[in-house]
Image (cartoon, rainbow, N blue to C red; front, side, top):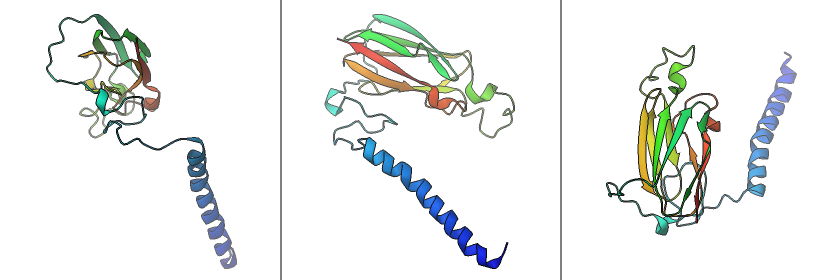
Length: 178
């Protein structure tokens, strides 16, 4: 490389880097409303919703009685099955989250990765007023969650553990009908 070409190469790289970094930012700011209302629920990961702090009614250990509906959910990379769960407002919901695989832990070629056994498997987070968070869903493990579906709407759920290269696809919708 000739000495006179170094400044040209550096300027080209710098211009490309600035353009690459600023175009997505400009696009995001022009197409998405990224403002956050003051009363949104803290601690949620990705999606804003139609709920706010006044709608949260969570009492840990509250006796809900027997479930009105029990839903089996198979948790496996890269999907939840079923991807959509529909219940009626006021129902006591029991989710049985069945681990079909162990995420990264049973993928070929990663058996000896540091920390894999401790941080493998899948998780489940239901956003919104329910804010259900479950981890440790591995092959052969079933986690049980019960709550009352007392707020109508559509709420996202997702995997909370990086379980595979397709982790971003592990999302679904929880629908509470009036």
